[in-house]
Structure formats: structure tokens, C-alpha cells
Image 1 (tube, one colour):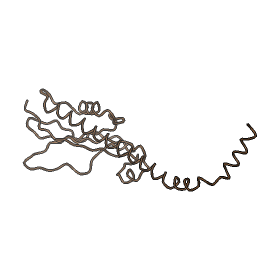
Image 2 (image 1 turned 180 degrees about the horizontal axis):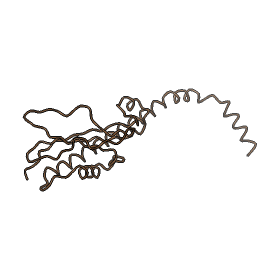
Image 3 (image 1 turned 120 degrees about the vertical axis):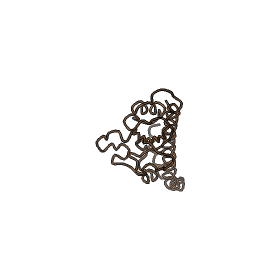
Length: 179
């Protein structure tokens, strides 16, 4: 049996029957792998963004329907992170911005979102003011997440910070109920 193995290996190396399949495999396999990586990246990004939006909406709903004192920044942040369970390091990577807006003379939020940049120093809480009775409040949440496959063309097209993280941004509005 041992003397047949080298003979079979030599015969296998000389056989050229599978060379056409090898060429098509070498051409198509990288494309298939890139498609799978892209689908995984977009799926995870979408799931994280959906969970952040769902968490923010549930917390805002509790604030709207709740009676008594309005929750403060840290409590809102913790509740959003509890609801958005698939966000990695949510407490460190989530930044909230809550501002008052007048519905009669509307001015939108700035388009430049202030998120946490892991490559910079930690910034203090940005413009987080609890609302008074019957005031329109806009709460914007931004979470930084690391891509799974940073070399895909889709991730390369996204805006990244110095650490290579991408931002998930969502916002919601509510009216502070009278006390």
C-alpha cells in the first residue's frame, strides 16, 4: 500500500482533466466571497441600526407616556442600551443629543452629527436639556460601531472616523407632557 501512494500522487499531478474547472473556480470564487462578505456586512449594519432606532423609540415612548419626573441623560442612555442589545459597547459608544425646538418656527438639527470618536479625547455631554411642560424635544442618538469586513467596497464608501468606526444615527421627537 505504501509503494502505491507515490505512484498515485505522480499520476494525479500529471492529470490535466480538471484544469478548466480550476480556472473558472479561480475567477468566480473571489467574487462569490466578496458578495457573501458584503451581504453579511450590510445585514449586520442594518440590524444594528434597526435595534438602535427601536431602542430609542421605546425609550421615547416610555418618556411620553410616563408621569412624574423626566429621566436624565444617563438613565435614558442606559435604557436605550438595554433595548438595543446587539450594539457593541453601547454605553461607551452611544452619544445623545436632546434639544428644544419650537414647532411654529422650526429650525432643524445641524446636519453634522457629533459622535464619539475613539481616536480623540472624550467630549462632555452635548446639549442635553430636559424639557419643560408642553415643549417639543428632539432626541438624536449616535452610536459608533466597527465594521466586520472593513475591506469591502461598501464600507470603504462610508464615512469613518479616525479609528475606522462608522456612525449609526437616529432621531426621534416628543412633546414633554404637562406635569
